[in-house]
Length: 144
Image (tube, rainbow, N blue to C red; front, side, top):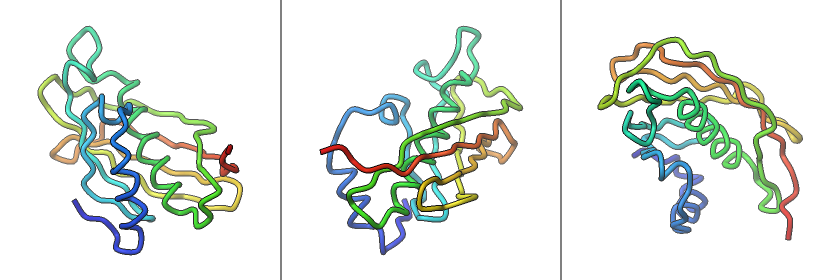
């Protein structure tokens, strides 16, 4: 896994929390972590398929929002702030069968003081487009 050096302490703190999260339940494995690109793999497993044995669209959206949320949070310099999902959409282009993996690549489109917008491409291991998602995040004050 590649982690941008300037954010290493922040991301190591997040990983040290050892919380049970949706990302861990879905088997998300981080591959590249930086303020300008988040990349992760997710297995198409019994936890991420729909009844017909293909990747569930909701799992794709969960991968996209996970990457966008962490990426947005990494861009916040003020520890009293947090980035939370405001809106997300996705277009599902191609199905992926049980036993395969997908790769999510999220990049910021806009990084503002009040909102951030991230786009995520989800691809097969061979680079074929599976889904594309856009997530808008609100920058808010953390509650005490």
